[in-house]
Length: 255
Ligand code: PEP
Image (cartoon, protein in one colour):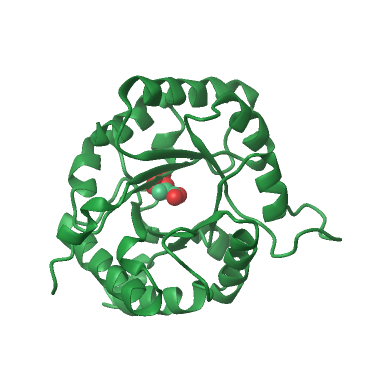
């Protein structure tokens, strides 16, 4: 396998926190503390928080210039009769710079297929925002030796035409590692990320510069090892992004 690590050193990492369905107004103080911590230590990485949609506008205002704010999902349409849904345009208008699409919880809980994920990524790009496209295998698929096949199938189905390093980030999130405290070995992460790098290099115009995040039980205690893996250009963090101290412990790997 090619050693792709050397070429990747110019990619500015991204550490993104996915708050999922957590966060009332009082949690804004955690976002503010993250912003303060980032301002104090100036990590060599972009830092993003993806709160629930109800908090996007207020968080964007409170942390302006220090943190990027992202949404967690969007509808494919700009507006219309879709009760309860939210469009990429609306999230952008509220201050989001990026939107996560295809998170495994959306794929599992809402039956989203890769073609739905691709359509959502198109909506994100239409708004001039960054799509954070998630892929990852289940425990069963991994046990059956299907990890790379699953990743390839999800990439082929979820990446729309027009994907570039500027408008898209890929997050590799093994489903079995999300919220479980389990993580793949550094070697396993290296293999999957090298595969994804090869895929985006072959199938997009500038895949060499695309940010590839690892996600799944990233914590301060394992972040340094995981972030040091070749072709890992940052992290997508769930549970450990809810508290500023925990999240800063991960971000500070890049100080
Ligand atoms: C996630 O859901 O995107 C995630 C990575 O969760 P956790 O960090 O809690 O495993």
